[in-house]
Image 1 (cartoon, rainbow, N blue to C red):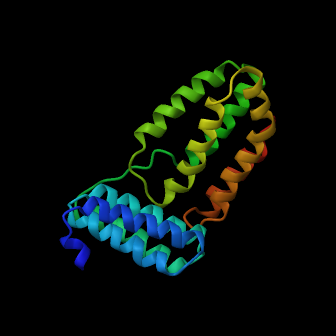
Image 2: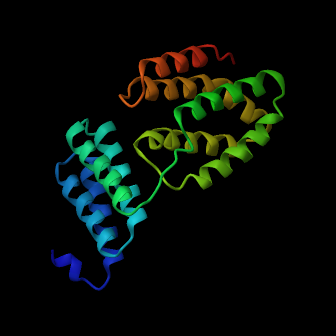
Length: 202
């Protein structure tokens, strides 16, 4: 690969990432090659962690957007192989259980003591900052969780309360959808999540 001999490998990786995103927007098959080449450059530089995270993100893109289970599995398996070969452990922080409990916690605070929402936002920001390592299981939750926390943080007072009132049930339903639509969770776990989410009242 000619690009591996370039002096500016980070720039080459960036260019491949950018081209992949362009191909992604039009659902082009060329996105796959660009994603793979970007990961190869990370590995050439010895940047294992970015290579793993990119593999996971790309796997999720192919699972969620391209609906290509085969290519999705290739990326997920690559991330797992890189962790195993480099003795890198991963522990999910933002699990499906964590997200279900978060949904319930916000609902409880809304219905009993709205001031607790401030503390919840602060804690969740810290959790998101600490969750740098991702896998196929936790990425699907970290993505929507970070967006929701940002929207809560960007609002104050009555505006925040109104936002929760209008959107928290929809957010909780999205969490449930991501659990129930995935093969990563057992029927028992899906049933438990469904019972808790459906019991949320706002």
